[in-house]
Image 1 (cartoon, one colour):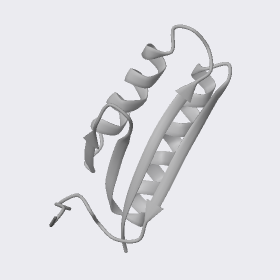
Image 2 (spheres, helix red, strand yellow):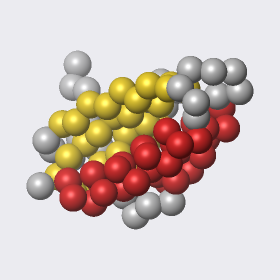
Image 3 (cartoon, helix red, strand yellow):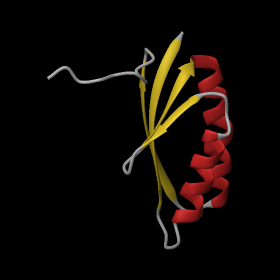
Image 4 (cartoon, helix red, strand yellow):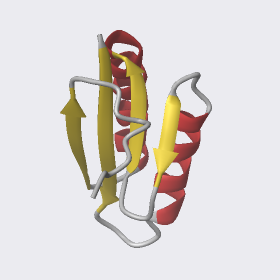
Length: 86
């Protein structure tokens, strides 16, 4: 099953950029389709592959920050090629 996941990592401390950059670089290093914009990062692919990657990388990201939030949305379909038709 294919999924699309939108992630927003928000460390709750000063000097937050290194943690976010590290998290995004780890996602980019995977074989999955990863897209970024100023507000979030999207990961697209097979459910098991995406969730395995996210389980590992979210844990590492949380270990590198003192306090933080991770917002995640999951859609059951691969929406990487979505284009609005309006």
